[in-house]
Image 1 (spheres, rainbow, N blue to C red):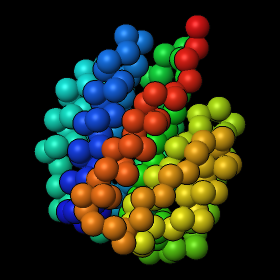
Image 2 (image 1 turned 90 degrees about the vertical axis):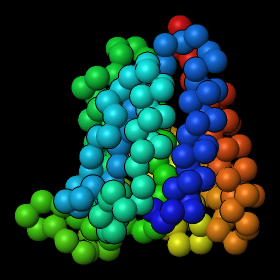
Image 3 (image 1 turned 135 degrees about the vertical axis):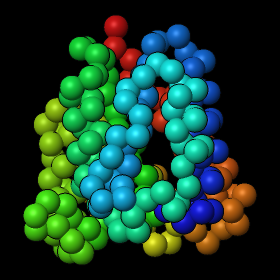
Length: 192
């Protein structure tokens, strides 16, 4: 992500973490990214109740920490696997996927710049999330995001898509993103 959207994301994540922390439900949050230095996904922060640790991870990262290509499927896969392996039994599991670009990179031995293949991998991961009943809430940031793909991922997985337009000033952009996170935090499913 470029610096401006990344700053807005950091501010919004703080609001999201504040909202999650205000409800005594022992919710856990993790952070996975889809464009690590090697072009694969990376779990930056395992699922944790330590919301301050998540805050510190998100605030110490800059756009330059990551590779410039976009391997959305890899980040989504890491998030799904983290929930599968470390999510609490019986707890609702939600993935929030944010992007300001288009899927254009794949991993593995056949990896590299391959937009059409990368897009298909994202849809395959959305189907895996659907099969596990992990809704994916997608957030498209700015005018370069692939709105159609993000809408399709949300639809396949049973999530919701939010679009934050890039033609508004950064201040309005940040406010929209913060509002989106507040809605997600207050409407997440509760299992008794």
